[in-house]
Structures are given as structure tokens and as C-alpha cells.
Length: 448
Image (cartoon, rainbow, N blue to C red; front, side):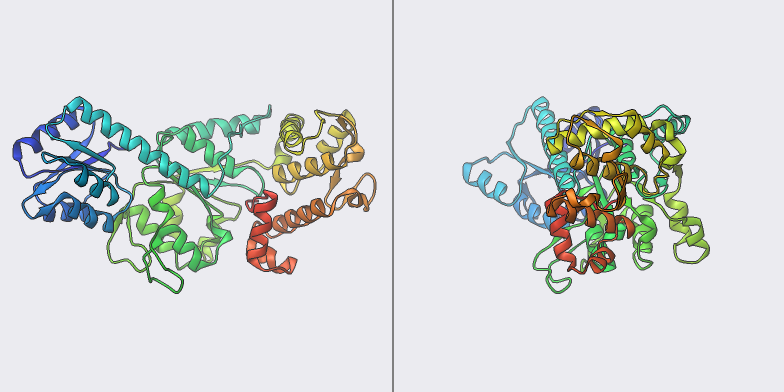
């Protein structure tokens, strides 16, 4: 982890404050102290805090009132209450207001330490779950292969994983940049925290802004409640912004400010929120060229490109195609419940001979169509279809079901549009909402 967990202790008794501070610092926490509701709220608004330990009885209010005020500033920070006046009624009221744990004084310090660790782990688990809801995390090996290109990529990614700087993955669509971003997060110092993913090309500017920064109730028509942004969900973890080159110019300075100052505001919000995230970005575009054309901010480019990594195209690592194909075939055959586990030498030769403009994504699609056409237990050259053509001729799709054909066309158009859902929906002649429903139903990713 990049920094110690920051705990704010709120208690009006000086002896208790400093005893807790000494104990928590011995456990590796960074501690700030407050002796009243007013001071605690002021510090909470201006100082990064990961967890609050507060007393119930304070000179200018009580802990439940303070909890409500803190929750209005940041609804994510976990809070533990200590009180000398424990009762079931008070405990129920505190928990209903969002208290994470309720302990009665005098509290055993070892027990308090265990409670705080459990509260923090539960908090991390909730944020990891929220991150997964935005994009399924898959455990795949992005360095499968024997080529010198893939070995060099692994060396670079291992160095990047160990560092804390921003990572910029550069490469053509379909080369596996998303999988690399997940691998770098999982093997880095923030692995225990969430990884949140967002495709900048998949949203209109106003929606991208609200997804990143969140919004308050009434911020715009339809904002019937408050919603945390993905930066808040990823706090202390990583944010993966795919297709960063497609980010609207109006949002770029806001992202830069959040990265440099670790502060931002929700749409319609008045209060700054603190955030500590590692940025991993990816693009198939020439960002330096976009900077020269004044279409991408130079200061943001320098901020996100601390560790640039070029991901090789599949045609540059042709020696890896047999191993990749067998690995993908095994996974696809299991998903489609097909008894195919082998690829003939003739089929492998056809795969090696293709130029793969769509890279690994195209290889996966070709193998999936091949599985749908395959009638035996081994994939043959005749089963392979590149685009609309195959060794059997242009009518090879006649063997597909209507559902498989629709999925094939959606993937084909999405790939042609670089994963841009709006553009793909227009090209397909269907509403954007309908395309999203079909993507979800077919399990198709918009990341190409």
C-alpha cells in the first residue's frame, strides 16, 4: 500500500486521545486528533481520513449527530463509536445512521485493534464488490507465449507493478491492454484495494463526468439521489481508464486536478472530497500527436505517462499464436459446452498466416465462430472464418443460429467502431440502450 491508513480519533478526554494515538501508531496507523464535533468536522473536510474512531459524548454534540454530518461529507469512510453509556437503544440508533461498529468503554486495546482491522477489511471488500459490478475481473495470464516480445513486455509490467507512478499502456485495439491493467493492479502495492475500470469512449461527456466524479441530488434532471463517483469507489486502489485519448477536453482538466491535488467535487457538490488512487490508462491513439493537435492536454499527458508501456500487436508475436489459440479454445469450449480441445496443424497454419488486424480480440472471435461451426472434437482449417469469409466461402455464416449471427454482427461492428457504443448503435440502427441490453445478454465486452 502506498501510505499508512489514516485514523481520526475524536474524544474530549485528553488522556484517552493520546492513549489511543500511541496504540494506533504502534500498529502502523497515521493518527489525527480532535476533541469536539466542530473540530472533527473541520479536520474531516480538510484532511484525508480512512477511518474514524469517535466518542459518543462530546462537549458540542454527540457522536450520532457527528456521524450524520461526516456521512454528508463522505459516505464511504467507516466509523467506530466508543461510549461509556452503552445501551441497546443507542447502539441501534447509531447503526441505523451508518455506524460500522459500536464499542463500550473501557475497551481493551487489543480488541479495538482487531475490530478496526475487521472494519477496514469489510470496507475494502465492499468497495471491491462495487468495482466488480462495473466490470468483471478475470484471472488470465497476459504473458502467455514464447516470443521475445511477450517476455520483454512481462519485464516492463513487473517493474511497473512494483512502482507507484501512473502507467500508460499504448497499443492497437484488441492487444489485451485491459488484462494487463488488471495484472499490474493485482501484483502491485494496492492489490488489496479495489480496481475500478471505465472506458472513456463508451460514454458521452456528461455521463463520463458523472461516472468519474459522482453527483449530488438535484445536480441535473434525473438525479433523484446522490451517487459516489468511481474515483471514490477506488480510493486507495487503482483506476483503469481505457481509451483515455477519447476523453472529452472539458473533463481533462478536472481529472488532472483530481490526480495532482487528490481532491475533487461531485457534480452539484460544494465540498471537496479527498481521494488517493493510482491511475492506469490505456489508448490505441497517438497521444503525443493529439497533444500537438491541441486535442489532448499536454500537462495531463505528462501526468499519466510516468511509466509508458507499448503492448505489441499479435502479428509481432506470431510465435505465440498456437499457445494463445489453445488457451482460448479451452476456455471458449467450456463456455459453449463443446467437446473441442485440439486444433489441427492445418488450422494452426491458417492462424499463423493471418495478419490479425484485430489482434487477440479477433483471434478469440475467430475461434468462437470456429467452435460454432466445428462438428468434431478437433478444430479444422475449414472451421475457421476470418471476418465474413472462410475456407468454405462467404456463406459460412449460414450454419449459425440467429442469436449467434446477431452476436457476431454486434462484435464485428463494435470492433470496427473501436468499442464506441454510441457509434456502433447508430451503425446497427438500434437505440443505444438496446445495444447495451444485448451486450449484457450476450456477455460481449465493448473494450476492443
